[in-house]
Length: 67
Image 1 (cartoon, helix red, strand yellow):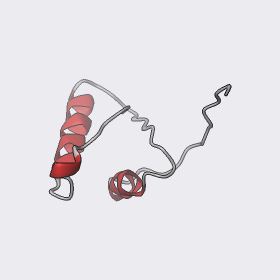
Image 2 (cartoon, one colour):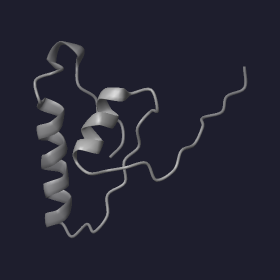
Image 3 (cartoon, one colour):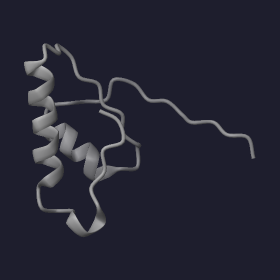
């Protein structure tokens, strides 16, 4: 799961949770045996959502840029 966002005006309504569950259901029906998520370390609401679904950190990484 990459780049999932909820518009600010629609947050805190359970929409991300429902979309996420639908994605996981679709993946399972399609035969997926594993799911990997990518989330920014400062995105506490997303981290809480994924932890609620039973996910935990597998590893972390950094983006690099040249000024």
